Image 1: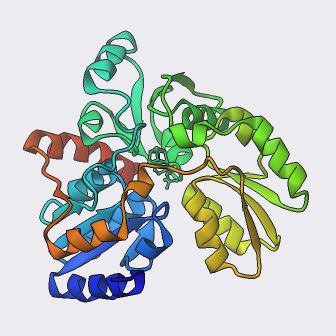
Image 2 (image 1 turned 135 degrees about the vertical axis):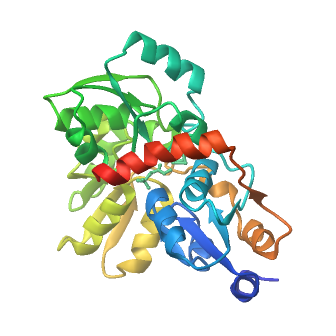
Length: 304
Ligand code: 13P
Ligand code: SF4
């Protein structure tokens, strides 16, 4: 089968097998085209709660499929490629956070949604890159332990100088590998372009940006802007998706290294098998994790 035939077969099978396909925006074009919903991980898990399908296939990484399961416990949720994990989500374990909490007992533990459900069980509230500033501002605690991404934590802390932040040394290997030197070079190469950067990048890179925001915020900004050229400082697929969405504008990658091999582990063939029912992995979480990790997400929904 060629790509087009495979896509048509997936679209036919998803109706027959009552499957809703979710694709994170870092997925390849051919996967986004067969998805029912595309967006960031939290947007997708909310979409899944509204879908009437009994089965959900998540094209993204493991923590995203876990978030879908936490919010839709009655559905069967599958991760299209069982090997697609996120190194940042898996950087810190429950034992580490429990021991840090003992050292900082009066700190609220704020977890980026890019964490395992196991880690969420020992955190007070979850945030997305879009909601982090708003939610941390609303917390009654003045002291914040922000995990696992120290770059996002640094960005949030600068927007809320009235609170005390404790950051741990974690982060996204894809975004964090970009240097300020690369950002300067990209600006020199495209002097008319605005630099749009994800807050998972290093502070020295975000300092050079015209706009800092989550993936969804970057896409929204580029679509609505009157400007015609943009350097995209987040995963490489966003540059491609924006080029399709706004054919009258020009989009450049900040770096060719901004490719997340974990996100790209999922192929259209994986999606085909997951939808056919002979591939992917069903996400099963124990009752204690379901209850305690869900609490952390519910707190975000309550404050957001
Ligand atoms: P957002 O889509 O929430 O901006 O997250 C970025 C990311 O790295 C997802 O893995
Ligand atoms: Fe994880 Fe970074 Fe890849 Fe997102 S881009 S899945 S945070 S490694």
